[in-house]
Length: 489
Image (tube, rainbow, N blue to C red; front, side):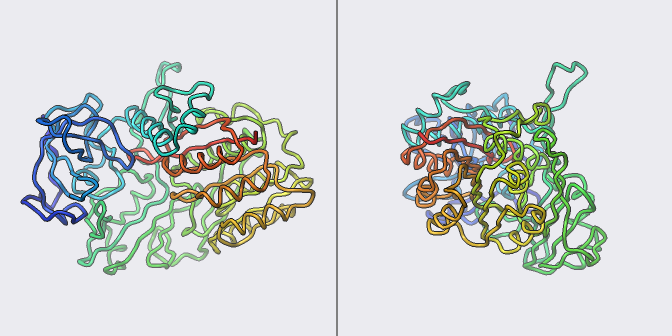
């Protein structure tokens, strides 16, 4: 039996509650004895009452398949009941002491798998990915994935650890898993109405205070954002704090729009420098300058791994790319890349645009489209030496995709690379991409359900799935990063 720690200063919600209300603590609910079955998308598990195995389905957080738990109902609707675990009666062998108890039951969001050992987290994500591809994508997507070389059972793709999650032990042939903490280079905190510094409770606007930030890299933890007087004196109720630890230079803190140094003084240059190792692509180190408020991959390894994986898939004819642990070991043959026409959508500050432009060379063309004006300014600065690249500002819509695809000299794009936000590109944008006639498409997705929907449209639009890989870029959460490679039939 495992008694979960009570959230500090809050106490367990209890009572009868009112049906239909949402958010932990917003509705006090009854306790249920549940037997847990499969994981579900969103960090939940499917569970049913112990005394009624065919009874009502309850989506429960902070548990594991195979466990028997006592859970407190937090939401009742006509479509679903939701609950949070308060006691584990029969624990799974994959359960560990949470690396972040404050993100446990009735705590902050963003660490819903912190009680699961890392290898089991990746199995969890593999199962959810396969389920979304089958259930949301439909039979055509499921069959396409199952037909891939090396597809993992059950009908899915293995989720790969990033380099900092694996190190070589004394026996160099043996991989040893590490905790997966200290990997996030960007975090966001909120200041509550009573001055508490923390994060939002799951599915709520309430700010819960925090005492630790174990998922953040050490340099962010060392800032003392939660307790140091130099910071707390600057906080105001309702404020937002964003901490950024770039790969080069000191951390930066954005406080209600003001850019501050690690010493809590106004920054002279509101820019951070990111350096990405592109040795495996023959490009050495890539240097980026960007505003600290702009989007950047949060896992310390993700920029390097994604650059290698996506660029190889787009230009090198390598469907899956090298594994995360050996991205610099297999040189890319640059020959096929020269002169290619590349359309990139949702291009951000140019993380992928820069290596794509460098490899196609002046005989090629790269056109990118991004909706965030600050990111566009950063990308144009980062691509200043690549005159054959055009970075356009604007929302990605069917009309703008069609316009960008028809603006190339000598025909439409050879390759389309797109990295849409969590909700995916959507049916109309995918259809517009297909109409460009591109022979190859590389789709980056951070949500398995959105990935499944977009893949289904691509397959109906004349493409076949050549490769699919998944990366554990968000340890201790249910999120993953996937890269799909499609070619025209």
